[in-house]
Amino acid sequence: MGKYRPPKERSFGKGSRRCRRCGARDAVIQAYGLYLCRQCFRELAYSIGFKKYG
Image (cartoon, rainbow, N blue to C red):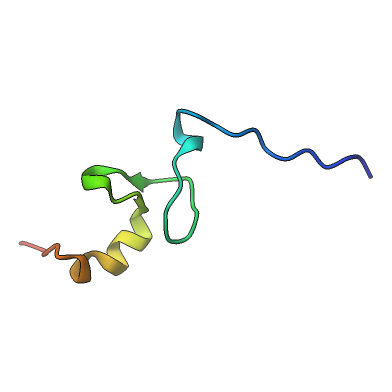
């Protein structure tokens, strides 16, 4: 087995943003400084203060 090489630290782009709660890198909501993936946002939205209309 070869040597382990840690992933490169990203400074911009999709790979640089992570969900604060679960660490996912895809579908991260940055609006209002949330930095939550969409799944975590749906679980926490009501407790944060967002309301569903319609």
